[in-house]
Image 1 (cartoon, one colour):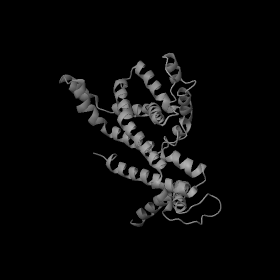
Image 2 (cartoon, one colour):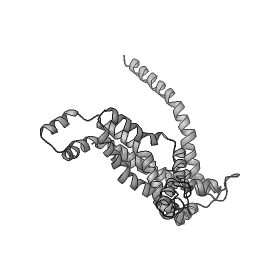
Image 3 (spheres, helix red, strand yellow):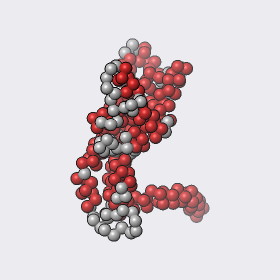
Image 4 (tube, one colour):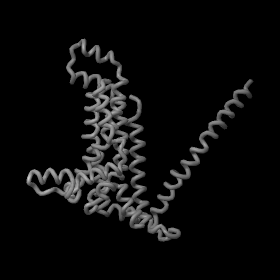
Length: 294
């Protein structure tokens, strides 16, 4: 009688192991091992040819901390996070509240606002690069019509980052809008009916019902937004390639430029280790504080 349940448990365990084995193998080959190798390479000065032999220990990390361009890249990631949290998510929430009702007009508007997210990052970056162009772009055309000198928005450090941030907001707010609409549709309608019977104002309804009920979805949006901001790359490369004068690099584009393009694999691996620590630290903390059940 006791042996039968033990055999069943062993069979279930074996079956689970067989199902997990392919995924575990792929994770080990394409995620775990490359992370370990990157950590190992970061301890060497190495150009990617032959075996790494010039051991420098923490030298690459010290160079990284002393590099003004890396501090700029880190700051730019911070700006993307700040704009995502302060502009992108509130804009998405405001539109979600307005477009939550399942009307034909709202469905069309949802589609229009969501389309930029569907567009590939490189394609979106190239489109906006043309729009920002100092000779043929929309901004240049409007400036000429107004009798002003056409601005080179992507050619000046003072305007390149704000121009990039505007594209980031345009590209991704539709995703969070749809996410918030999905959360709004899960809220019990009787709460709104009770508030209407009590003659509650729209602001009171939003503050007392919508925000608390939507809190798990908002926290999920914050989690996705910060992680995505830390890994920003495609739009940067398509729009500015980190220029002008390395003023719009993010950590990933900085890694690509100084680690891959210049074949300084050890230094690039050090950047990758720092980026991994930041992402893993936020993912762990985010799951603990943002995604935990209230």
